Image (cartoon, rainbow, N blue to C red; front, side):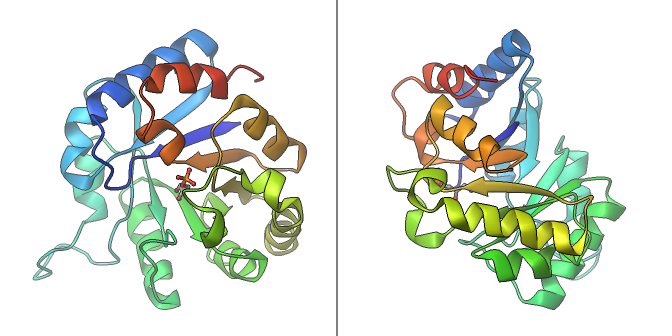
Length: 214
Ligand SMILES: O=C(CO)COP(=O)(O)O
């Protein structure tokens, strides 16, 4: 299971989380990545933690003020990027453009969707993985695998029906090792989570629990 910690715009210390993620990944052998604010990519990557962008724009170099270029993310240590997170939704053509921009820059891609129909559409764009995150459960206390196991199973089927090579992740409310195991049992290859780590008093302890069953 791949565990991706999205720091969103939470007021946590990205270096503390990244250092903990690096240490827990090294000690456990689990794959853990941290996705900080774009401005923090380089210093998070310098910790040695696997580092992902939260978004990249479909643009190439040029007159695009405010763009987060895939090339810039890669040059600053990102190894992958989320695309179309529920809090950063894009038009279909722009999702396609962002995935293509990420590919050009050598970034891995996870395209998010709110439901199985969107997951099928996202899988058709050929990312490395897709992630189903029901918006109503994001930031809550109950994990998607517990609150709505059917949506994870249906999303696995939707991705598989389009492209067997595209992994399915799930996210929303994930905060414990039990949540990670439940997601895996439903067919997910990884989880996205945010508040469970970013708002924790002791992010390292939460990360240790998350990988405890792997
Ligand atoms: O949006 C998410 C990860 O990208 C999930 O957020 P929470 O873990 O806070 O529910």
